[in-house]
Length: 303
Image (spheres, rainbow, N blue to C red):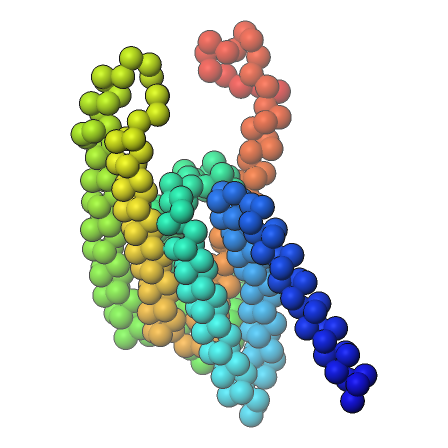
């Protein structure tokens, strides 16, 4: 009994020590480091989800036409809902961190320039999810037709029986199209809001203080208060955009069959991870590219 008690105390002590250490590490971070740490954790989780989805899809395909197929589909549903839960948790964390400094999320330093050039309200456009559905639908159809013409026996893109995105029914496509129109409308409303905020940067008191100050960029209480207010409004918009992204994913998943939903999420996550990697690769190439003095005036680049 004493030995068990001592062991329990030791475990409890270890947990407390770890928790205290973690809190101390978090306190040692500035806000941008905390935001970047949150992002890196998210990317690591996404990499794991790629493996989870691949494994679940492979298992379901291997049991096609057997009694285990129904069990596999249930597991796929649970996994897709778990991934939607991941997105919701990440959105909550971003909302908490953005209230301390929201502008970092509109051009993150942890992103590559390529990603920031494509960013909308701190992330991807929700309407891009529909473009992914359409792209996968078309590409899978093309692949299946090509394989059929080549008489490749046993070929299957995502399983049979309406499992592939190329097998979307007319009813599914109709629902997706209606949702697409709705989401584009919501995007336009939010884009107008952020445009209005950007215009406010040239409003009173910011513009008048900038003109009246003798020295450029001197600290000013009125300007700080105006910018703080703007940061708060940007944080609210970021949370709205994240919620719209999660809502869009959830609604698309509702329309799709389990294997279609898993295939869609797998493609989306891989696209996100790939864009980051491709952006980093382009950055390395850009840094290695030397502009010759003779070509500088003409804007030509060479190695």
